[in-house]
Image (cartoon, rainbow, N blue to C red; front, side, top):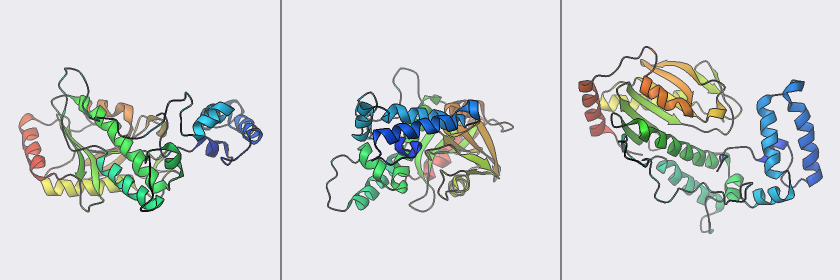
Length: 305
């Protein structure tokens, strides 16, 4: 489905309660359309968001479909795992060697917290029902959003080719700490975290900033986890990458500094493969013997969350 469990609802974008009358909804839309129009000094991103919100709830039919948890075209909306989900892609081209289950830890955690929030013993016919998900607390919605982001990244990583090895859901310290993806290839060793905060973020002093974050420090957290894995396997990371939805980052990629010699970068999801294939600026390539040695150490020490 097009939006994320973390995305603001059309009602939130338009600044009205879900119970607002059709007339109140229309007035809010017209007011925000004028206030956010780029020709009058408004924010282009908010202008687009207002238009998208109106498309989803602006007519009685579209609003009824949205309120029932359906997309504007009437297709059932679900964030459930696809049947037979695999990060491997179809076709004859060799894919990267992969280990672990992308998104698995966060989906399990999501289901456990959702049951606690709904009430133990209460029946949940569909834990991925969009109406139920939208009502859930932020922590629960964020787990599901990040699981979906992990799965999307895993599908991309599988297309890197046979020269790359990918480990998903790598344990990094305590039971609640993990690295989403560890990637080894000719351009180096990378720790990758897939994030979806539901809204655009900025960069300040080597960390992500913005109203969408609720005290999280993703750059710092990834660095701490990468150090734990590096220490255990006796390896050094080339890069620590935070991957965000394209629309949540104003520039293609931004440097966040370094940590123990590893470049820290936040980048759009669409350029991840280019960064991994071309390598980071000034980062040395990794020779065949070194790749073999690092892979052997990782295979011997990596544990999955």
